[in-house]
Length: 230
Image (cartoon, rainbow, N blue to C red; front, side, top):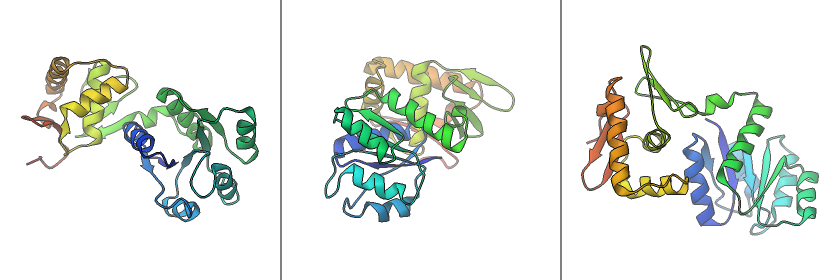
């Protein structure tokens, strides 16, 4: 799992990005003390940095320059500032890319994948593969495979499974699932969620995994990993 350091002081944006990036199997860290970014950078040892320009204490250009003096790690600026000089300065201080707010989340993910692929020479497919209960989950192909067989899922079903596996052994509320699907532009109602979860569980039954998606009445759903959730 790649570690991303998100240097962003907007708590709402940070939490939203953290949640969505973790759904892509990234390990996301934030900054506690914006006057001591380098110490926390050293502690986390991230594989990639995403950074705003306007920050408390010192701006992103300062921290980009400091990081570059110690590391060649990929750096993406994420900023609402749109003047060409800001983009030029970002590159001059050592950033690898610049994403202007507001932005489409898929664009940010594509840029992250491109940088990680270039710097660490990995396949994008590796990020989209996850092991769960002895099966391989392929988010790119919407497929769940075991050694003997495989099943195909719809885009909604694979998205729901990804959300549940990301918080395995923890109850994910129906509201949280619906909100995540809406934010991902997959418009879905409460009744539609029930239908999708039931279809997902039925398909997983074909490879012996249906019982590992549990319904917690009045609360939500749980993806079981190893020990059962009591």
